[in-house]
Length: 177
Image (cartoon, rainbow, N blue to C red; front, side, top):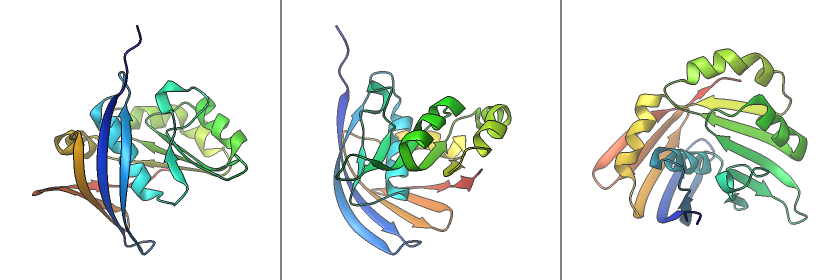
């Protein structure tokens, strides 16, 4: 029998000073059995960075033909395809073929090795933006994770401030391509 995802509820207070967005969103996140809480929290950071009224979480790890997040138009075409992790160039090419814009948010202790191996192939892809988060900073996101979370994410330039209760973590965003 297949394991079912664990459901998390989040109230996200988003303050994006780069885009003058101030909103509160009630979100439901499914933590896939093979996914870590850090990866789920990085998906939440990607949601905040790309907030749009039409942005939604997809089936993600449960579907090979869908990204982690996307913006779909009413006609079902994809405006923005968003991946988290150390995706292969083939995976990103799939997004390029289906969407107007593709974004990848890489994280983890081996991002430098992954980037050295795949940078040439990824930088050659059109309409693609690639970012990274420092491993030491995102690893701490699991400390903020709870089944029912109320968090504030403040975005200012390339800095994210994630606050839950009295705990605040700073996360740097670096554009790779």
